Image (cartoon, rainbow, N blue to C red; front, side, top):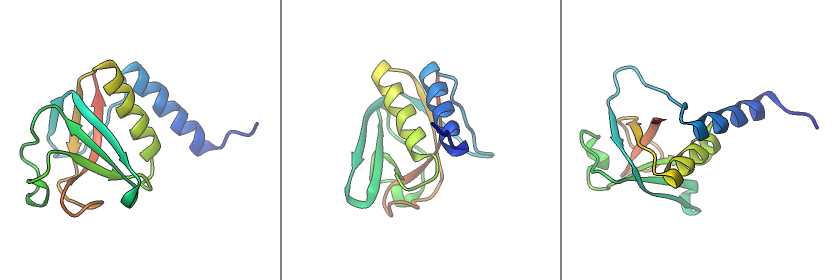
Length: 118
């Protein structure tokens, strides 16, 4: 079986997410540390919604009325993000989420940029 370079990166990211080592950060971004109440995959709009247990604070005005982050499943690394988030939710792990500061994938929710599983 031929393993493509991109597929091997996804497998590595999933493996790291399961061990709690997956970490990313955005320069200048602040993170919200919480557990995950829900991770919802919605077929309409090809979006994934991430509902933290704690309230989102300091996000952009466009997402202030909605208590979740979102990202498009068509984004690069979306499958690895979803796998890591579901693994974190399943084990009740603490997650630090960094929002993008914009509502790119959905006009009324902050786009998830990076996350770290503790």
